[in-house]
Image (cartoon, rainbow, N blue to C red):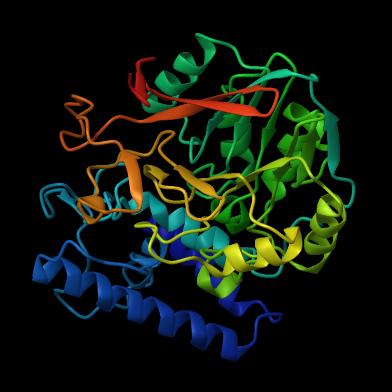
Amino acid sequence: MFFEDWKTRIETYFENARHNLQRKQQILARLKQVHQQVREVIDSGSTSATGIPWELAHGLTILDGVAAGKPLPTTVAELPTRVMDDGTLLGCRKWELLDPKWGEALVEWMEHLVDRASWGQTPGSVAMPPEHVSLAIAGDWGTGDGIAGKVAKAMGQRPADYTIHLGDVYYAGANPDEGRDLSAWPAGTLGQFTLNSNHEMYSGAVGYFRELAQRFPLQNGTSYFSLQNDHWLIVGLDTAYYADEMNLYMDGALGDQQTAWLKQLAQGCSKRILLLSHHQGYSIDGTSKTALYDQVLNALGREPDYWYWGHLHNVICYQPQGKLRGRCVGHGAIPYGRASILDNQARVAWTETQSAGDDQYPDRILNGFVRLTLDGETLREEWIDENGNKRWPLP
């Protein structure tokens, strides 16, 4: 396995004089905590595991710091896949929560807690066609695997003016992964965009910013941007760069510079506003709002009309809350199952439940993307699955 190489890299990190004893102790304590949390979930048979950073799960095993007989499973034989209540798949197959290769994310995260790419200062500002605009949006798409290929093919069946990736290239957004995976991203006829995310930040977003220059020129080398016409202001946000690194960038944040830019952009704006981000504005069931939601509203001065986010590997269309229609579009490629936590949830208008018929992942439901058509002030959504079929709204 890869554990020996990762162990060497972690030990080298700890030996580096720039990283003090307090940080080392903090990381080791976190690894022990996560290991125990995961062990309890496995042993109890629970399907609820909110808040566990699974990328850290194998950390103690990598460091040989596990008590005899207590390492976490690393094979399918040791742990049959279990569908968690949020739809994530607890198992050891590729992309499941205990896939051993998530260890790469742990190591990259540690190595880049200090070393990261510079914050961009020149956000792209794009003038869209005046009346009719189409967009194809997918999140958490960067696996380079067959599911991602199917979703890309479905997107390409009806080319959109702009294509937008809501972030996450796996396992840790490193240079080789960014280049390989994003090379297959379907281009829009007028351009394409990609957002920063927690997984890009694990490698300091170095690979992410390199890809901006090569494949996403409309962004001017910057991780936030805007598109406008007379009817719409579309804003792409970087909610990862200033997120808490010790919490693995799991909860989104704007930072002072981006907040000031967003305030200036929205000042006096009477257009309809559509937001794009990696991190979410609602809890998964839509019953509570995140700290990011508050930051965004304080900067905008009002609710946006639509907000599309990823991060959670689900597709969820929420009922309107106030003026806002919130949407989770995190089902671009990672295998996921039916989220029972959303059953009979009044704040959810639609979520996917249809089996994908996948022999490799029998519990997997359909992945996909959303296509938007802007016609003047009107927005029409088409939620499309990996096979190119419209899933919602249905006639």
